[in-house]
Length: 250
Image: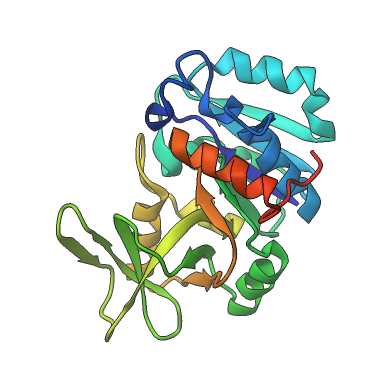
């Protein structure tokens, strides 16, 4: 299986930790965020990975070389301009289209950690015959994704802007928080008409509005933490010490 790790962000919320390194090389209990993500993906069976880089890109490349790419085929997608999640995936699309495979791939933020069962999520994605499946949970967030009774994406709500955007009508949609973990069918890549800098959520909403199935996999009860702030890094280190989660061998 193939995967893309989104690691190109500036990590501004992690400063001063990211003053001299990319956020992917910030450590939780002596393990870099990149190592933790790769270990998780390897444990699931991923053997080929593409990683987008921008901030301190050379440090990322040197780090991967020093680790012999963790025994994986690793490709680098270097972004001179930050392209956001959608633009970053579009630039890396060749990696998933090169062999003509129809198998889904994983898109995973480098700055999240979880115990979400990827096997069950993949099974759900395939049973739903979804174009894409996003892992979601019930928790407070600044941006909610909205799902209908069939757990298909129908809109989003941005709390700060007091803005609700509907891709299509739905009665009493559920508001759920996105985890930064997706399974995606390669055929989505050929539907990406957007150019430049754009979020993958924009693609999902547009395609949902056109009748494509973007499913939500509810990861109820699974551990999940955003590692985008220094205090969250410290909290994750404590969680690891208490064995609330474990780190897969990279």
